[in-house]
Image 1 (tube, rainbow, N blue to C red):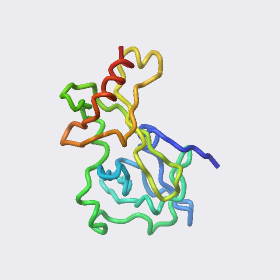
Image 2: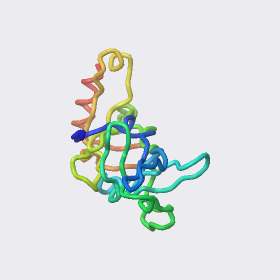
Image 3: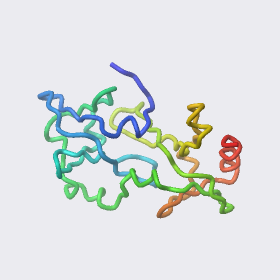
Image 4: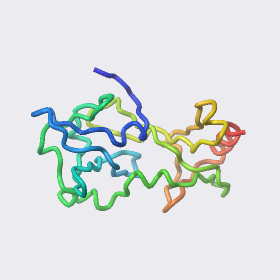
Length: 174
C-alpha cells in the first residue's frame, strides 16, 4: 500500500474511483468542494457518465492509491442535494484561476496547483498552493509554494497573503 502524505491536485484529478465491495469503477474525480474557512475538502465531485455527476464525501474515502481512490461501497456516492453544506461551498478547481496578492496590493502570480494532505484517513486538507510556472520553473521543475494556512482571505478571484510571504515568493521567482 502506498503511504504518500501529500499529493498534488493535478495527480488526483481524473483518478478513478473504485468501490471496495465489488471492485467496480464508479467514476472519475473531476473537482472538489472547498471550505475556505478551514482549508479543508468536504467532498469530491465525481463524473459518473457522459453527463452524470455525484459526490463522494471525504469521510467515505478508504484510500488514495497511485491509480485510484477507493470508497467503501456504491452507497458512498450521493447527490449534491443530499448534503446541505455542499451548496454553500465553492468548487476547488476555480482556485487554479486565482491571483495571489499581498496585503499591500501587489500581485505575486497565479495559482498553478494545490497540494493536499492525505495523512489522516477520512480528512482532506489543502496543505499548500503552488504558483503557476514560468519558464525558469518549468526548466528547473521547482515551483514556488506557500502554506495554505498563510492565506489571510479568499476573494472571488484573488487570495491575499502576508507581505512577507509575497516577498519570499517574488524572490524565488527571480
